Length: 229
Image 1 (cartoon, rainbow, N blue to C red):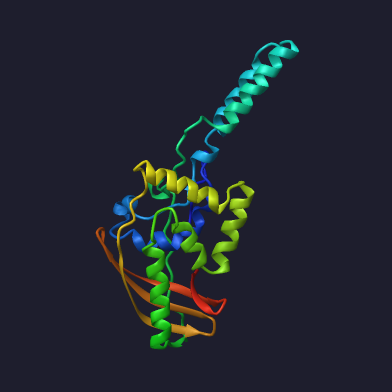
Image 2 (cartoon, rainbow, N blue to C red; image 1 turned 60 degrees about the vertical axis):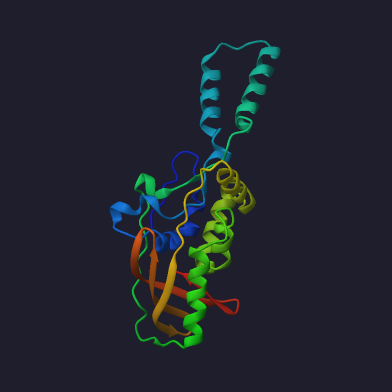
């Protein structure tokens, strides 16, 4: 999996790799219209402007203390971003640097029970059909294994972005009519193979962008099955 972190994108996009692989149906050339990245770009969009201001300040002759104070105030204003700026959620499919992960069925695993199949199917259904664009990231975090969520949360912390900030960005983008479209997806699971706390299953998804069949991995954590890799 590759995710672009150029500019001011937040690499928290890693947490939605599984959901994107399920919602982005169709050929590789058609995937630009599907899926979601939780990379919030606008909250830190002033970074590049701040850099420009700093470079400009170095080139100008030194001014008196009053002049320096004005320059510092200006930099602080730029760092905070322009008032009313709408945060945006970036779609990594658009720059072609996102590679959807592929998995193989677990070898030697025993056939899963109908109860296990239904539980895994419901997990995939929740992730691919969130109640809103704003809450999608939270749903994915709640239904993904620690192998996925811990690195994503660490990266979010490193970048100074919280889940609440991402949800706020998604909400504002949604209110502005600029949210990434999440197609309603029908989900069905088959060929469930279980090996201890690990499992694989064939996931068939069908939405407005087409039909797709692929293998998904799961891990049993906190008393329930979660998406994993």
